[in-house]
Amino acid sequence: MKHQGFPIQQKNIRSLVGKNLCITMQLPVAVTTLFLLSSSSLLLPVVVNADTTQINNQNTNQTGNQNTTQIKIQNTTQTGNQNTTQTEIQNTTQGTPIPVTGNIVYVNPTSGSDSAGAGTSQAQPYKTITYALSQAQSGTTIQLAPGTYNKESGEVFPLTIKQGLTLRGDQTTRGQGVLIVGSGKYVSPTFASQNVTIKTENNSTISGITVTNPDSRGTAVWVESTNPTITSSVFTNSVRDGIFVTGKGTPTIENNIFVKNTGNGISVAKSAAGVIRNNVFEDTGFGLAIGGSSTPLVEGNQIIGNQDGIYVNDTAKPILRKNIIQGNKRDGVVATVNAAPDLGTSNNPGGNLIRSNTRYDLNNATKTIKILAVGNDIDTKKIAGSVEFVASSVNVATGNFKDVTATYWAKPYIEALATKNIIAGFPDGTFKPNDPVTRAQFAAIVTKAFAQTQPKREATNFSDVNSKFWAYDAIRNAYRLGFVSGYPDRTFKPQQQIPRVQALVSLSSGLNLTANNQNVLSFYSDAGQIPSYATNQVAAATAKGLVVNYPNAKQLNPNRQATRAEVAAFVYQALVNAGQVQAVSSPYLVTVQ
Image 1 (cartoon, rainbow, N blue to C red):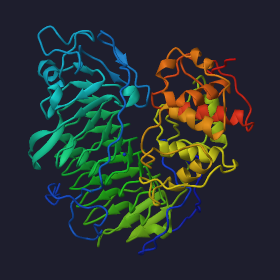
Image 2 (cartoon, helix red, strand yellow):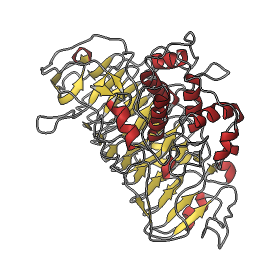
Image 3 (tube, one colour):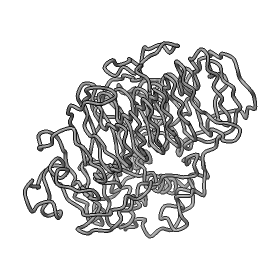
């Protein structure tokens, strides 16, 4: 099986395991992340240190703790709806489009005004989300311009998304540049006083924003017995949770990124349920913490590089299907107290890929519960506790991706690299071509693509990439080959999403490309946006045919985050330049003399 373009050794095991297996194995070099988530026993005021907490049959809380690191949020040009009604905004990243079924009001924290007559157009927006919410009626979409929405800009937290309202930023970039930062007191009927950024009511929608709650015990979005849709957003750097679901909440949480939240990506408590599908959970305490008597469906998520992937306690019975749970720093899936996660039956196999987690892939720390796990790909040497395990090989797609249509602009590049096992898709048969790529993921790709290249320099260590990080060896090898470098402070920033300009500089540098002059850059209508440090390498990449610009060949968009499709196109063209593959025709390939 190939996972994300890198081989992972496995055996097709058909066996039953019902005993304790307590063998700890080292994280394999080849693991890579994906291109690329009631009972009164949940004690929120107390934070579990996920680095030191022992998993046992104690009734523990369900928050994890890690050091918080700031990530860079880049401003992007606003996209979305013009001054119309009864229209539909296509989510070009992934997921279901969010329909606009009523009036649209506009908000801009820089140019707006909270006054009568404002909010009706992009030219005359409101200034604050707070004011827009006070004016909006059910069926209204509140369209946010790029900017930072915080206390200083006039916001009063928590923001309550009333019934039937849609809060929308930029779906195509998952809200990069549309940043909501703040916290306010909310008295939860199930968990008392909380610090919350956004609270949802029934039939509300959140899409295309980035949310951070920097306060003590701060949660970005609180879902209390409601059924919101939360999609295409980023939840990062909150002191506790990205999203907390409690009471009888039944949210739909799809296509989001949860990264570097000190506690958990998502917590689910009490008798909540709902759907958590196709999200990314990375570098947080617990990717998901599921407790109480909750029963959420957790499907198709990528849960990578967290302290624990999924932590289940109390009497919770989450349904886990088609998730990829790899490279977590301790365990992949943990069950404690009387939890009984559903990992598949003979009639409904789990389809989860749970491998290469540092201690256990599946840790049943309950004393009396036997976990049935049918149809998953798990290393039997990394199963602890009472587990009835029927193994299955879980394959990721390597071509004919269902979201890469016959006319999709990058189809030739994507399928060619997938055939060579340089990149791969997801277990649901998708490629997610518009998802962003982190610097760590990019390092893993170029290391695979140019494996035969001779090293140019000795490997180095970066202060923010430790030896247990999933991409540690890939980053070191990419550095040795000359394709990546770090920052002056000796950091690599592995979780930072790579801009297009960095990807081109990387490939140009790794291939030792040069240009006679920089005149070729005049081909681009936005050449002035190219950073000064990158002009030589971008000129070389342009002259040597590495640049593919969709939908306009003349528009480079150098500082926009690179997508999986764009990285595939750049890397393929770099292989063409290196003489390793045949050229393919594309109207978006930049060709200049």
